[in-house]
Length: 575
Image 1 (tube, helix red, strand yellow):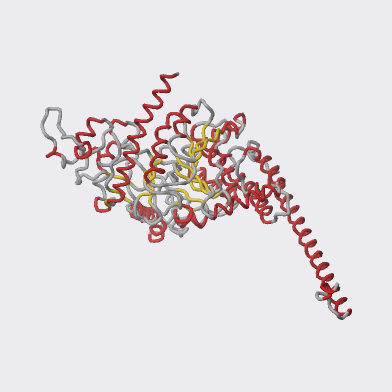
Image 2: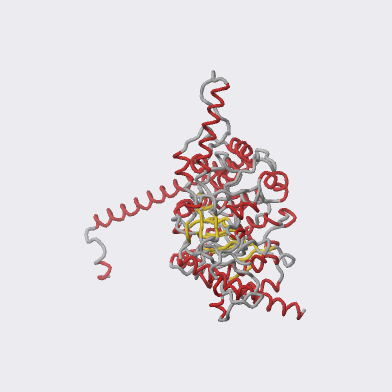
């Protein structure tokens, strides 16, 4: 009792006063908590009602703009649940499944609000997040869609990432059942490196609802990825550097959580621009600052916008997760057959279009696709796939003297420039965040993936255009609203005024296009032979360090090609 007396006020009046104060604080705190919960419940009911009203509007497979409104409202509701952990987020699942019947939360390894659905999941999630922040958890990962016919290219990519660049991100390979990627091929890929896993999309999504095939598989691979921050890669993408820190180092990706890369700047003529205008109008909001200020496509100077061989999305941001769901909807069979694939080339534009129609921030690389070239001046020969040819061209590496077919010594001919047709390739190259060197390219490491007899690409130079935002800022044109209509601003203009306005617009257009690499879209054979000669002064030599990495990547390709023939050939013999 004496011990307790030391903690209690000796004056009874003070004791009663302290008890009264504590009781008052408790009552006020309880009342505040009750009021807060009541306010949360009222807000929740309001958002559910508003979403119900939005979802009630009838929309079809071609109504992308209206669908964007619905998905944006759904993202707002999910965000509200994430901000208020006292709410049961399983209610969000019901609404998501209502809009996207093929989405089954039980089959999803990750979605932003999954960690809040039970106290056990919250504890596990906290442990995972803590380990991720310490650099040991799979917070960021790579997913690629692979089929049997692209297994070797996928192995090339995995080998370069792991053995050349030191990439340690986990890699998930998505496929559509055994007929798409057989068990023997999966085992071959599994042995390429550590931390390789597989996702059978036929077990995740009901094929009767989505009918996945071809390009349409990729968005669903992104959705099924177990990594909150996912880098979606094509099997034939080529990385020239380590992407481990891409989400932290690339400014646009770090700021918005979504990074897309540009296609070639070509204009094949299409009604895509008009389609986008109609969908933006249906979505009820103006084009984003990106479209207005940094898009050659929106200015109608290009018919292409995105190269979707690499897509980076932080799915932990609920708006972006919903944008991935929206992208998947665009690639379901009914929608892609009636609309998406009729307007665009496959899935490639649907990723950024989804974010645009929802009003979710996103970023593009500041440049349109760069070009790669093998210099006519260096004398570096084209790397042939044929072993005998390769030894002749690299006697120092093979330890043998190079001879031509007639027996004459070729050592003195090693500086002979390659044939003119070997100077350029059709690869779309994409810069690192600083415009210093290529980060990755689309089209495999072959000089021409359609004809591997030409051997491996052996690039020495590249051509990166100017930053598009700065170009459009320097050359404001007369149709910057994306409409394509040129107006002089005077209702009484005569025909000569209109002609003058069109001429000025053409001059501006030529100046803008001159800042970007040229692609002869309708004449690829001539493009191969002339691209290095065009804008000759703007080509930059790739660094010795880049060249060293490229040589190691070429060695990886050769190693994989040999291992594939040995391992897969032996297994075929066993069968």
